[in-house]
Length: 164
Image (cartoon, rainbow, N blue to C red; front, side):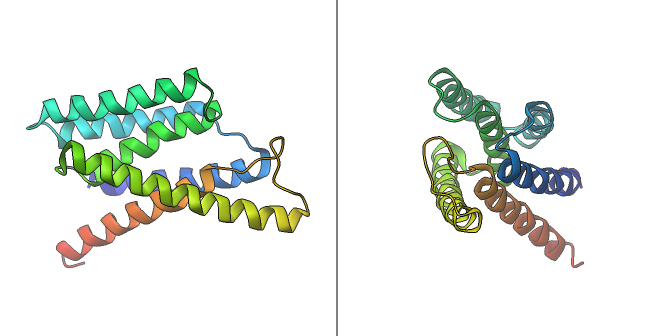
């Protein structure tokens, strides 16, 4: 039941964040980090029998997060959203191990970036602007679409298992 509650609340937040990123190119760090903390604590419950794997997964995620922040690869809000993205992947594909996590994370990030490029192109056409270094692409809409799809897929699968 915890996944369902976190999932629904997170979907609402992701929709808000995607719209916010398109409108203002800004992501609010506090709610993003709050949702990340919720998913982090949920991951501890999920991986209670496999804590070494959980420590390895979170070590990889935090290492990448520090790299993103230190070298300004993405904006601060985008980097914070990466933490949430990874937390949801960890909780959605629990039990897949380190290599499974890396595979799921890589595929999900690739799809989200492709979607972000597509959304950015449509946005540029609508606003009659080019995509430039100064007016870049909003990354969060693509990430949000991928995460919403993953969460909904997991929610529907859990409902199917319960015969609802």
